[in-house]
Length: 439
Image 1 (tube, rainbow, N blue to C red):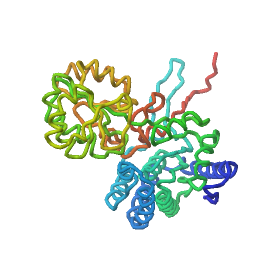
Image 2 (cartoon, rainbow, N blue to C red):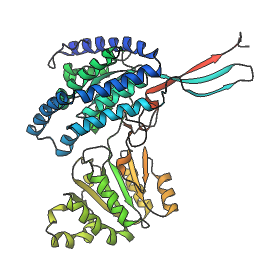
Image 3 (cartoon, one colour):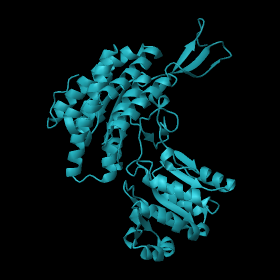
């Protein structure tokens, strides 16, 4: 793989690197397309073994990125997303083995029929080809994407961002070495990181070289890729996720769910950012929820009704600084931190209207024991994932049986929600006749 272009190189240098890298990936993908599942699964196990065997080298590189992140003042939630550990690398390796155990989507017959004229028609899953990926400080994504593209018969060209530069470089080296040792082209996994931001721009303009581009990161990154790219884009979404506590909710369970949804990992896109509470449940629910959230350092950005329930409690506990007045900006903010917007609503329809106005279409949760309310919420909220009496944190490829995910799509074409193996395929028509000609 050619990666000699410096991060400060010109746009022409970046375009040349992207072109060279994408063509090498195309050649590698053609080799992969002809391989059976056994070869691909063996390679996935080889990648997993290589990651665990070279954990120390990866952690050493990650330590460099973490030091730079702390010096630059990166938010704790983003640092957590960047950080690797022995356990996290082991979990990433395990996810590769889980992907190996999943059915191979390539060659699957989606549907088919025999027409009245005798033609036999079927639609078959085939790889997308060369996938471009632009993402931020998420080194686990480097592995997840490589594994998913390998299993689904694709090659990938990565642009992983400067915050995780050392970690991504170490991981990509491990993956490429393991591919070569398994008898597969190393160029199934390539990077244009040496070209810096110019490499990302060149990827966006590499129509004909890159078949599809997937951005994964904050709203600014995703918007820039969608607006600038001439390559087809699968849009993953930022996560302004909501939890609605209905009048008929199990309030004890609802406390546990909002704590998990907000605090289990604050920097991820499926963390809750807004809590909506039915007015009839507010006086019983909010004090208990606030106690549990304040114990974990969460600042509540509350509307007037929620503050009225909590101000005396916050003052008595010396936690007044963790209860602040909500502004209009709070309803549309993906915090990625220990902050939570809180609003009291009069009806479930008011909750649905709030979500419709402010959601990014990622994940929303309804907590209720009333089947009618549940059905109303599920039908009325148009997001990629709806959780019923469960944390928003379950919107994840690994949690939903996909092994891993390319990202979580909030668009409505091609793929929506967590994108696993099937989302990395398209279909082609195969039509069999016996000398048929069209009359």
